[in-house]
Image (tube, rainbow, N blue to C red; front, side, top):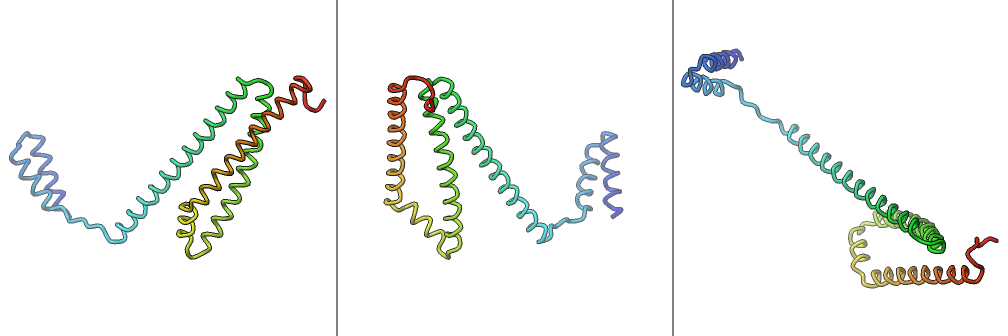
Length: 173
């Protein structure tokens, strides 16, 4: 152990005095005197595990940041539309937001329950892939979106006719 300390002092002294060739030789002897360092198998396993955990944390934070940005953009867009729109459209927007949020919570709850059921089965991955690849499932989603768009359009027309019939005052009066 004392050998590499001595070699280190020789190398540093040669560097201080400007003896380049002696410093090079002392530097080489220093590295020959240093003990070999090898990582244990458990160290390598712990390092790999820590790297994977850091990767998972980074991806999770990136996903949360993207979700927060999407929510913030949707809220900003909604508030901008609300501020720029008229009374009837503002009510329509508020009603649509309330319906969409309650529907989204219901769909989210149903999705969580469904995911729990699928994960309980042995072929959960195959079930999910089959559901996503099924053209009938895609058709059902498109049909639901079309019905929702038609409902929003009908609500808008109903509110417009109500305003024309009763005037621009509140609905409750």
